[in-house]
Length: 192
Image (cartoon, rainbow, N blue to C red; front, side, top):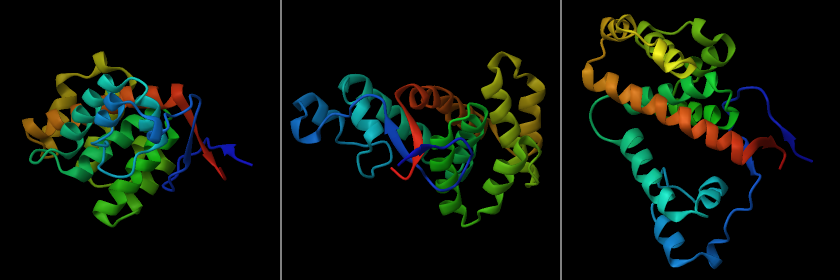
């Protein structure tokens, strides 16, 4: 028996879709083309198979996702993951928070930062740069128009340059959108 998960975790839960994913063996040529490049170049998840019902937006979304999260230069991969986690925490997207916390942990080989964030939120006991990134990501996710020049100045004080600030903004806002898709199309469960 599976149960919906409501608490943040670094163990990635199963995502149970509300819409039946396409059957890859029955996919149309357009769906197969859109599925050639998965968001993280891993196995094709049920989430992506649900999005494949409409292959053209999936193709565009995958290219955008990969460009924002995996592009070389600018903000580091782990700090982009931190931006994704900040948005996912604010939006209460348990699944996305778990996936990107796990990616952060794998990249840094340090689970303490994510544990701190999941237990203490914006008040997490983390280094100044991480705290600035987390705070900006959360503020941007709570209400984008409330982000001010002072918020950008705080990122600069923490050592981020303009390209890193842009990358953080992109990774955080990408997950503001992705979280809403995840919430609408399915739910995180354990024991599935």
